[in-house]
Structure formats: C-alpha cells, structure tokens
Image (cartoon, rainbow, N blue to C red; front, side, top):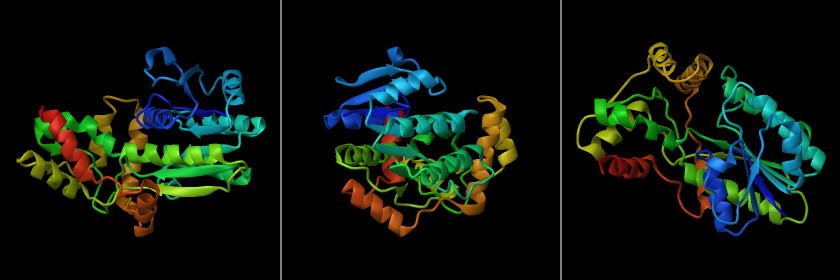
Length: 291
C-alpha cells in the first residue's frame, strides 16, 4: 500500500511528502532528478518524467494512491491527462489532484483552464478523486524580498477585489489527510472538491499595509499596471509564462479570489484549527528577512 507523490520536490509536493512520512505512510516520491532531492527517511525516491509513459506506468504500478501535482509548463495538460489515464488503467483506488481556485472561471488563463480540463476528465471518467482548489500561495511572496525590503514596494498586482491567500503548509496538511483517507479506505471513495483558502480576502493595498506595520516603515502597493508587470516578469521567465501570469492577475482584477465563508469553515474543520493568516505568514517572513 503505497502513496505516489508527483511534484515531490516543489513548494507543495515536498511538504506533502514530509507530512505523509511523519505519519508513517509508505511514500514514493517521483522526481526528474531525485538524486538532487533530500527526502525524509523512509521515503523511496522514484526517477521519472511524466512525459515518459513507460517510467510513469512503472511508478504507478507500485502505488495504490496518487497525489498528482503538475508544474506550470507548456505540456502541463498532456502530463496530467496521460498520468491519470495510466492511474485509471492500473486501477489506482485513490487520487488527490491539485487544481486551482476559480479553475472554471478563468477561461483565458492557460494554467487555470488546463487544470479545469483535468477536472473534467476526472468527472467524465468517474475517477475516485479529491480535487483540491488552492487559492494564491502566500509563499509566492517570499520571492518579493528585494522589492519589499530594498525598494519599499509590494509588487504583486493582486488588485482591489480581494484574494484569500493560502499557506503552503495548510495545503500540504489537507492534501496528506485526503491521501491517507483514500489510502486507508477498503473501497474507492466518492469524488469531492475542496477549496483551499486563507481566512482573509486581501487587496494589494491591504497587503502593503500589513508589511508597513510589520516593518515599521512605508511599503506602498505597486499598482495594477499589468502591461508593465508582464514586461518586468518576462525578464526572468519565458514570455509564454509571463503572459500566463499577467492573464491570471487580470482575472484577479475582474473576478477577485475571495473565499466564501463556507470554504474557510471547511478548512478549519479539516485542519482542526483556523487556516493561517497572511499577517502571521508575513510576520514570520519579515523576521527571517531581518535576521
């Protein structure tokens, strides 16, 4: 009885692996270069690329439950569909798929609508899966250190409608719990969808204010100029990804990413505590930066 974790070296996947290992689960961690990873004791590293069908088939054949996380790449959708088809073929009894909040609403954002297509396959094929829809990760803002600390600017153009950012550890705890629930069940469980969110819907101005209060100096919001933002991001990532990210933030501006109260209540129920607040995350991050 083994849980196979894809995306096992990333922000979420590595936390899922650690959480499962701490609970004594038998974990196989799939990675392209597992020799570069540092997995917890007892975790079995599996070398495979999700575009390598035979390697992925072999890895899935050894698993009874699958955590499917696909990185944002041009072939993300193909990877996911192929992997799920192999899991279905192998008779995997439980799947937890990491989708995204508002996957069904942001139809012009490649990595959102790609995940929604995967959700559609899960439903159409009646796969025994939990679909997790996480909001924007708080940990994305760790990369904003230079802008915040060096230039006094919170640069992420999250807009004014509200984003219920979620902590990566909260995501991992719930993902691990869902995986263990399916792994321990004697029969496949029904499909379910869970929105993963933080307790507060924050605007760009509100986030800048939090940083200002924590750092004791003014941190201003960088604003909502998405054309300028795309140009800046394209200096560090491929142009297709910069465009994808711009379209995502445009969706934030149009629709927002605010959670409904029932989603926060479900998070609280699953965690056994309130989900982590952005202020708590920022306070811990600011302390680390200052030290």
